[in-house]
Length: 457
Image (cartoon, rainbow, N blue to C red):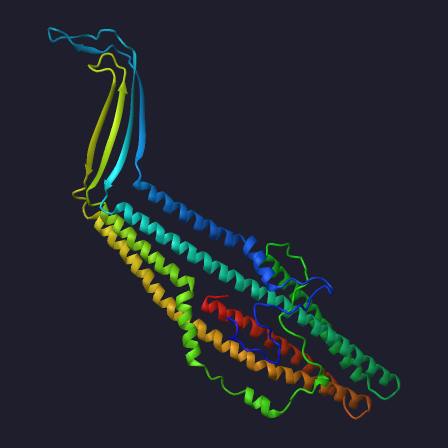
């Protein structure tokens, strides 16, 4: 879904391609999102399970097709007698059979070919074909979900890494301020209370850095889990955004810009409707429910077919070597077999109706999901626009915050300002960077979520 989130001054790169900015080891080749997707799609066990389910559905379809072919069966019987066989004598009285035999063999081979099943085999094949279609759609949905999860985890690592950098810069800035205050106190130009306040602010910044590093470790663990790698693995990642401009770049800071960007977001109803229509065509979840409903309908037809005549053709050859029987040789036979359940108490009819209701339930779920998908598309579109609107405001705030800190620090060193002004300016600077990077990465995530909502990530 390239182009749904517009770029702002080159900040957000056209997805899914990334700029070659390493977030980890400098000079090392960075792993980009496309590579992460390839690794996850190859190694993720959840996706592998979905593929195995699709394979199983394909084998079920092949099995049902085989029902049209003849079945060849054999029956072999070896009998041992404990009492002699008696046969009627000339006088009508039983007498022992001649050539007494204690054991004999009966062997038969039969080929059975179904001729008419009332649609049972045909509907079984159709049902399994629909189940295969549903399994394939579920596999596609699993791929889309996995790619979105990997993208979110990838962005979380980048976001957490930026957070560590911001927290570290805050510690450096507040350490310098504490040093300046300490120098003024030694010179008799500052007060101890200012020094204590600066030291407390630095300690708080160190706490935030510790927390930021912990969030980064957790983000790496989550990212590595999707790629089936050791959770402690750290590799260079290609960033998806460029560095913010230098404060000397003279970014616009007028109130008009902020006032304009804080206005309401006006939805582009035509674009949202077009994206929603596209989603209803491409989303695999809808296809899966449709195929499941079709499978239920075929299964219901299969159940109804059980009440119809079942006709098959049987060819058999029987061999027996019992000398006491009139014939001792091979015997061939051919027959048409009719099997017809005339009355089953309504079991097949009621079972078929129950299955049809389950199929109707799947169609109702599909209708509800179609409405939910339109809501997903609309929400993702609005979130994408919101993030876009935040980016230029946050960029301007960075320039303002850096300049505010520079002025406040200069005023304090000239004894024209207070230490509190410097600490407040530093807090505003940190917040402006947090807002900026959150806006950038929120825009990237929103773009992926919009693409997932449409079904073409």
